Image (cartoon, rainbow, N blue to C red; front, top):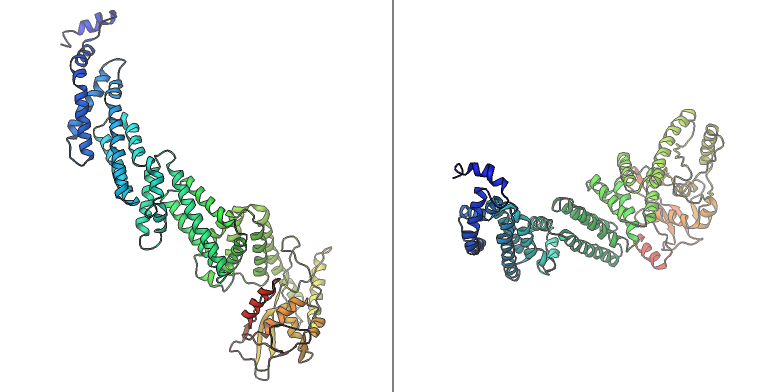
Length: 560
């Protein structure tokens, strides 16, 4: 018939307003006489098959595809109609049926299943609908069908689903450690996959995770306060483990989605900044992490732990406390050669610079430069002067780069005076116009002590302890008042130096009377019965200074 009517289609129809070409006229007649009469029946039959397939009954997908194609193709054959027939006569009904179906089913599943079980069921439904779209439903229905499915299964029940007490998001997150960790992480990945296409889906999940992390963090802090620092590093270790655990979840399960990074950051900022002492504990933890001989530095993945320390530092709003303490600890490590590794120290400063900027970390870098210049300076000094009875190592610290503290005018023994004056002369000759002050409370010394005829040991101690020990070259017994007058060491610092060496676990000196307190008339002697299998013994400096009487008692009990 097309050939028979070809001439009319080409020449007559285009010149007539009311005539259609043969193909379009045929489809128009088919629509009027057949389609309009049976479209409702066909639609209900197709939707019935879709419903039965959702219930698990296998259907002929080829037949369904051909049946739905009638709604599509008929519109395509008619000018100015296109997909309008499919939209009006099939798509709307399909979306409405989908909403009704999953509204009933989701309510039933929620009442019968746990949150993880429901999520598995929801994912299966989403995948099934995507399979129908790929197999026989026209692609035009993709947005409407999937939106209806996700709204009824996921969006409308999100709050109820996440807040379920026994199996909701809190339960899933709690199981991310222990024997069920793998299963719970799969549940979190499933939550992310399901809620990413849902409008405002991920932000609600992120808020739930933020609340959970806040709860855990505050719990750790409250427990630490109750324990009264029984373990100095327990809180920071817990916070690092908490951060490591959830950062991995954000990176792996939530594929580094920005909203989850933001939630984790806000959670840590919330509880870390409620307690100022977290900053001090973090600086102390960083010190022990980088300190030579620390158990902490030898038992951790150093780079990874430093990353977490810097991240925790980044969450602190008032950074002055951490920065002050970190700088003081770094000064102690550099001046007393207690750093485990210079590379690790520089790596830590680099990480802090990336987080905090140049202003503060430039001081830390200047401290390293001072130490390096001091080493070079001592090489030149020892080449020029090598006739001293004692060995000297000086670290020249630039004012402004190092933590500020008052310089105590202590009285140096003659041997120390001679070598220190010689170094001062050497330094000022090289750098004219500068001023050099010796800060005796920051250094350390190796002192050889003859305890008795058979016992000679080298004690590694603070410079204040060295000044006390050198007094016994003049006489065997000194009162506390006499030691203070002879050395000029401030009273509290002298108490620390003397009691540290008289401690029952040290016993370098003997104290009479052997009491917790110390008075001006209390007497000290070198302990002639001292024994130790080691040739070189480090003498600790005990922290017994406190502004609180009850803290003094606690520290004294720890000493004796």
